[in-house]
Length: 176
Image (tube, rainbow, N blue to C red; front, side, top):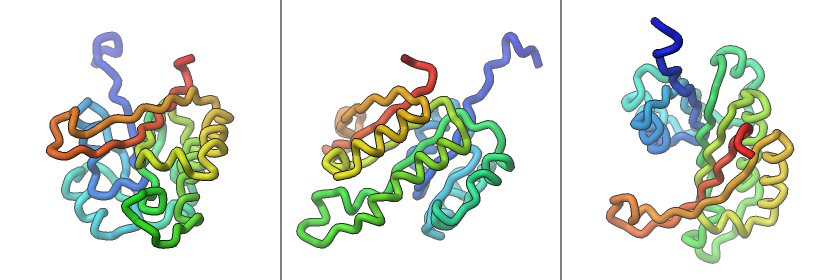
């Protein structure tokens, strides 16, 4: 293998991976999915089926020894993350909101601190921007050295048969 001509593959982990939609998009772009993390065992089954060469790590992100995981999984260039969104979403109606559930977004900060990737791509509902801790969340990412950019995209503009607006928080340590 000639290092001058062989393109290095971007290595990624996917936090709150579900069945692996974000992983699938990244893989389609040439990214190597190293591991997916999710609490839901059924998501793990789907992720393992979709990414047989990737590890699935089940459980609450809060309960993992992230420093050990960083050592074991090795260099990670990109973290994909879709933190819990139902408590940010207007689709929940007038039902009570769980602040502890919203706070799972801060696990992205904890994992970024341990893995030290160049990039983070965080996806959520647009109404996450109204969260009382949203500015604090962005400042925590910036404190890790990330340039943070927000982008709202509508899935209908990308061939999906429904109008589904999503917030993407794009973070890069090197782009200033």
